[in-house]
Length: 337
Ligand SMILES: Cc1cc2nc3c(=O)[nH]c(=O)nc-3n(C[C@H](O)[C@H](O)[C@H](O)COP(=O)(O)OP(=O)(O)OC[C@H]3O[C@@H](n4cnc5c(N)ncnc54)[C@H](O)[C@@H]3O)c2cc1C
Image (cartoon, rainbow, N blue to C red; front, side):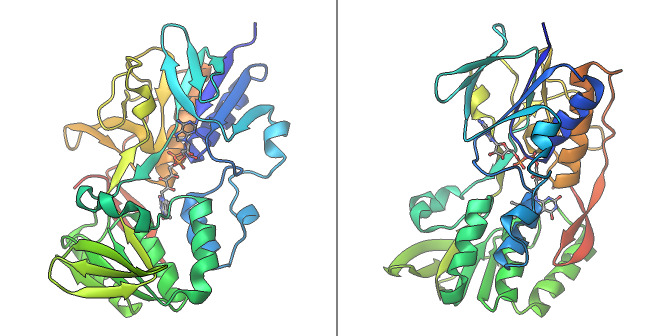
């Protein structure tokens, strides 16, 4: 019987793994289960979609015919809801089950709304998916002002593209760290200058206290300092959380993400994790940590794929710092605070 590989999540990590497995094993079955309905795309390019510089078809990870050519079964619009480690099955939301010999969890992470703002969730915009980007792009002609709270990839990229589109942007960060992954002090200062030079109103050491919808699509945002900002878009991020809740009762060991060894194997044999949902031991800080970012996800997917296919087990080299493109410049950030 052909070996069966299942990959959950068609982001950079999942697609890199599928390619690595196929390069080693020509005959096996590879199924990628993805809850989104779009063909896999680069999230880091979503800003270009908002700006109208690129259409959805220009940010694809692979061309549309790649999946058939590589004999990959891409099952879009289907969510994995649980995993049976002993039975070697993943269960889908439509009650179907898929058998696997080896499984890769590559489910990425999601933006988390700060606890004190959860009650305002219906008023908050998100910026993680193609659907989010298209929605914001379509709203641009009537959008005059936006308030963004947060310091991750999403918040900073959204700030950059909105201000470039002529929107008046207020960026609120609860502390003096302006980016996550964390920047060294001098880079943080440089980013502060870039943000200000771009024409963004930067408010540090403050936070959103209340969001009120005054008219349809027009919000009044009150900050802890008492300052209020009127705007048509509110974004509030309190950080990231790996998408691993569907593994809670599986027996696979979880911390924030899936705990993996240097070969990207979880505590269960034949079950691997890669990308923004994997937590790896960092010798430099003496604990496990989730390494965010696109190049990291691509590399981890490749290593996990090779190891799943049983090519000589390959160890992941852990880097301390990595360049990220922020406001059009390359700045080096580290993965931990
Ligand atoms: C706006 C924005 C800008 C960014 N800018 C940068 C940047 O400049 N540099 C950088 O390095 N990184 C950047 N990133 C982060 C980068 O995109 C991520 O680190 C990268 O996409 C992680 O890849 P991944 O494959 O681990 O996860 P993802 O790309 O998140 O893919 C995971 C996939 O799994 C799917 N999924 C989740 N749960 C399930 C389930 N239960 N069943 C089925 N499918 C599931 C999701 O729908 C998703 O498609 C940015 C991200 C965003 C949103």
